[in-house]
Length: 115
Length: 119
Image 1: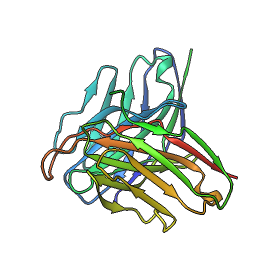
Image 2 (image 1 turned 120 degrees about the horizontal axis):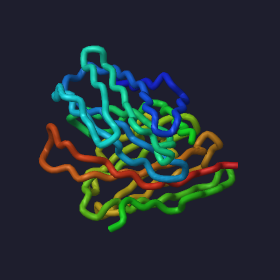
Image 3 (image 1 turned 30 degrees about the horizontal axis):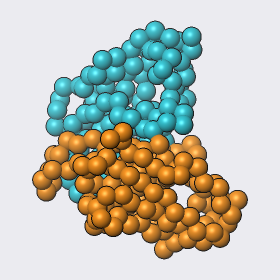
C-alpha cells in the first residue's frame, strides 16, 4: 500500500518570504500523480499543484512550485512571496494512475504566515 | 453549478443514534468519493462510486456504514448506531473520469464536509 509522510506538523513564514514544505511517499508503482492540497480553516480543500510521475520537469503554478525527486520519492512544495491568505493546512497526496484513483494523504502541515 | 455541496455542515448526535449525510457532486461528474478526516490527520478514503455503482470500500468502512448513489447523482452516507470514534469530518469529492483507465489526469473537487460529533 502507498503511504505519504509529512514530517513537519507546523511551519511558519514571514509575509513575502519563501517557505518549503516537505513530503515523502512510498510506492512500488511507476505511474502515479502527486498533489498538494490546501485546506483553509472551515473551508473546502482545494488543489494547489499537481505533478505527473512520468514528467521530469517540476510543476509550477504562479508562486507555487514543487521539487519532485522520483528516485528519492520526495515531493516538496515551495511557496514564494508568501501571503497572509496562504495560511492553511497543506496536504500532500498520492494517487495511482489506475484503478479507483483514490487519494492517499499525508497528515498535513499547518502553515502560519506572519505579517 | 457552484461545486460539491454537503449537507448538513455540522451534526451533533447521541451515541447509538443513526445519522445520514448527503453529498451533491458537480453535475457532470461520474465519480464520487467519501473520505473521513479526524483531528490532526489527513483525509482517509472510505468508498467511491462510478455513476451508481459502488466499486470499492475501505476496511475503515465497518458494517455500520453504508453509502448509496441511487441515480448516479447525489450520494448519501449513513452511519448506524454511532460511536464516539465516529466523530470526524466526512468529506465528499467528485471528479470526471473519461475512458476506462490509464492516465486520466483529472482533478477531484471537494465539498466543505460534514462535521460529526458523537456525544
